[in-house]
Image (cartoon, rainbow, N blue to C red; front, side, top):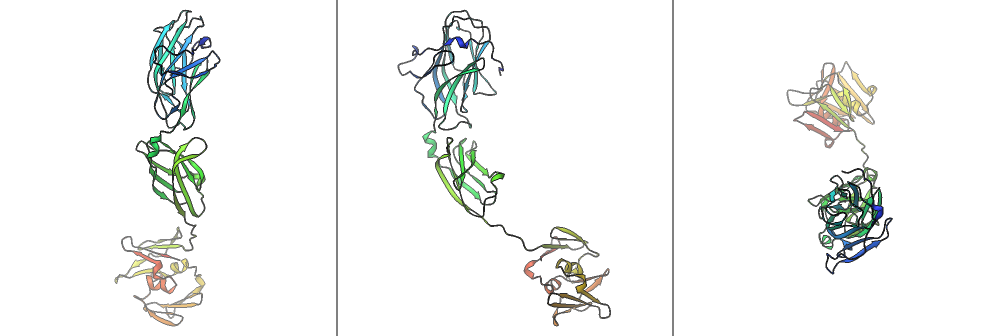
Length: 396
């Protein structure tokens, strides 16, 4: 990329307002403005509304200054509104510029091109005509904005309006679709539209940003973090063709989505694992003196005091009678009794059978899983047993 504009005699340029004799009668002078140098004329085939890649038929730089141009003098051409140059045009030069003009597009920034006078000129008049220069919009081009071509020397630009970027009407015949729309505090949406098109997103008629479709026409949108606090309830997601700065949408489609209210968890999860001396309670780790196990009859046995602790039963409410080998638990209005070696337990004096009798192992009292949990108020709906992982879990 040529970074430095060399000595410039652009201030001495004059641009003619006369039609080119090389063109047919369809050529007309579209724009002519007074510059810092002298009048500039752009001649073209009536390009006023640009809807895509476009050919600028011709424009002329004419010099009557009588000043010699130094070797390797560089002028730059610049397009705005995201448009880029697409080709090296045909260049006709006469007078002192004959066979001395070179045109080059900046490969790093194709919205800029350079006109280089490669050899020193004499002081006679000279003309540079540029024919059939192709320009095209990019993803950054905005609808309903002017397209201008600027000519620069010594970092001073002189600008000519080429036209206005308009939407190609055929594009509107391709509908936008919403394939998925996930409602949540941070919703996600996908769909299809024409390739490389800028689309506008609205939620409840509020602007939420723009997106560009891919080469395959697929678009997707995840709501930005700062917009992730939508209230619970029904919202409307809208997407349409982007039109200028006033958030005017064309061919908009909308779809409602629901955000459910927050659910406050009122239970805590407890897990025990067969053979392990640790258990978890609401994500926190606890330690056991002896691990849960499965007896010879396939019964799962859990440590009594650890289970009672997950239900906020104080140690003083667990009473051990050495003489009768009986454990009594006082829980709210219930009195529960278990006897070592007996498969009969009582709740407020009412007896019921257990699958197996409580036992003491390694100084720890163990009871059968469901009998123990049921007696303490945990229903079977809140108890899960995974035979593959040998994990017992329940909600309290």
